[in-house]
Length: 342
Figure 1: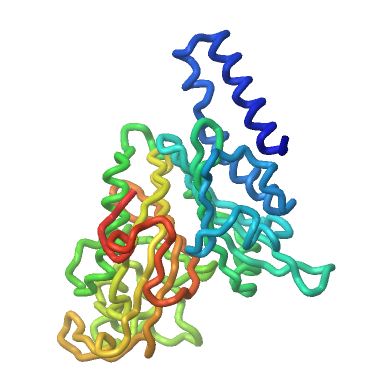
Figure 2: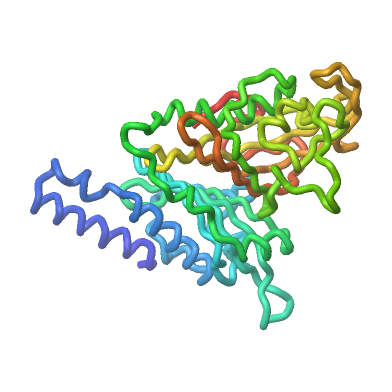
């Protein structure tokens, strides 16, 4: 008998004992997984990756696994190269849905056995009856970005609980987060942009909003600039209408929602169609040509901290993927759609 099969057999026997001792009505409670339990599954998963041993995990029959949008056999991909967990750890825990999402820094193997290669991971686990049923991970193999992220500490605001009387519903949290993707895709400078005044966005560990200009240079004027600036606020960037090079934001999957902390975690693809889409008019009527010269897709994992109905902090990790690529969790129609799904 394999270690995995033996574990399942022991787990099933234990649950039968619980049912007999406490009654069938309490069995569901015994199988449920709270925040601590779900977060613990992430560490168990990462520890199994480091050991290159999927059998260390309680896996459901038919468990699915994707890495960077590709369905793989469990034990392939990062399972062969993971070396150690890093210092950066950020969770979005969705107890109601039995899912947990995670941003973290990791170490992969290096040609030099004495060294590791830094990387980033976005991870989603679905847990049912204390077994993992789905595994989705995006691995960003940009060593410079990963080394930088590894030195950072997650903003304490992510851990701050929202007072019970101020908590938004799951549907409202997704609706607010989706305004970010919709506003960027429409790029008309006239959308509804629910940002706080001090909103910031971080991508692959680098601040991309409110960045002080270098050498004392003035902040560009959004009404006359020809490309958007990292010195602008979240709202100024959207109001400028200079994000047109993102032509489509699709396969928007809101996979983890945490109403207690006002957080939403999404996977999506940002398409840059290039060609004639590079030339467009800004909200002030200026004609601008900008963006990549070839078709380009970003595969992205993005989380949103929402306070009082507004986006306060945005954090993402992303990497280039083949243009038009799908996630491995959507059919073609949904993968090409810009509608919100959870």
